[in-house]
Length: 488
Image (tube, rainbow, N blue to C red):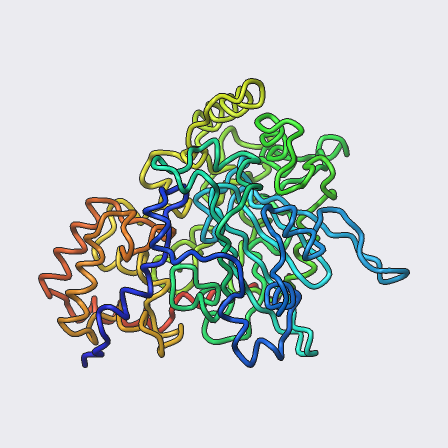
């Protein structure tokens, strides 16, 4: 049965994503506005929840002057390592750095360009250089303890130039200051866009929650100041959080990142994040089992190379079936060693003489199979049905909100009419950076061969009953499985 929604309405769901570092002409498509008063301030429920972020941006007087990340941190009491409160209620703002991420800006995250978290008393901030955005979450003050997620996007002076922003302007401290054209939205406004927080944080209509794939130690993708060798124990051959911290310091030296001095991180720093997210998680990365399977300890010690982890492979296979969201890569450092060494040297040169930087996000392997496992692309030889699940399944399924225009397309193709399929094909064939392209810029990319196979398949209408059942199952699951086992 056809679900007839206007093409313009559906296009709106994915048309507001700016290309980071784009020129003024590109950025204008994102409906940027001066920070005067966000639209969400006018909704009645916002007045009731009154989070710290609502209180900051919904003032009736002149809006706050925020021209840098530091300004925002000061306004929200999120200065790293600062102490809040009095007496027994005093609490330090913890800082956490993550070297690999499955988040929307995860394609930018690496040991030399980490994802930063600053955890305050009622609010938490996440930031990665290159994205020109800050993710925020805050608890309601109405006693419900409910969480609201926000996205603050900003521009820099370089956005208004003809050539747009350079890698140097996007991946250094330059992107943390000199902000212009701030634009703030809450999770309700973001739901029908490529920046939808609820697609992961409230999947299936559940109450929004904080996420942490690696909720149990060892926290293999998080920076750590604790040197395992210093304790005299058997650290094993796997890369540790201490190694990721050394990667960062080799590139950045003593340069603060999101105002965080990386050498001041708390040992086992990821525990600070675990405390606020809680142990009940929708997707679970069993780091201990994965590490033991990769590096089993035999009578003759460890092997020379890691094995394939069956635990990780089972999660990856479940993702390919559309049964759960993707977990992080099994390798704590999933970058190309050659590219990382080259980019580390480039950043060290920049610190010495402000040389122009190359693109720091081009740090992952070129091998298509590895890029799929890292979360950048669909599998290189994916059949059309598999490419559809991998690229489109996270958003176009039965689990997410069915009352918004995004739901007009569903990976269960048996229920789609010709109009919706034609529109989907047109969206898939758009250039990768075009407004309205499907999948969006931040999503897992379709390789050119996979894109052609998928388009040809959608045009042919040559599905079998077996394929229809596969897509129906994936749509019904909506990647909502994979919870943390109760044994730990």
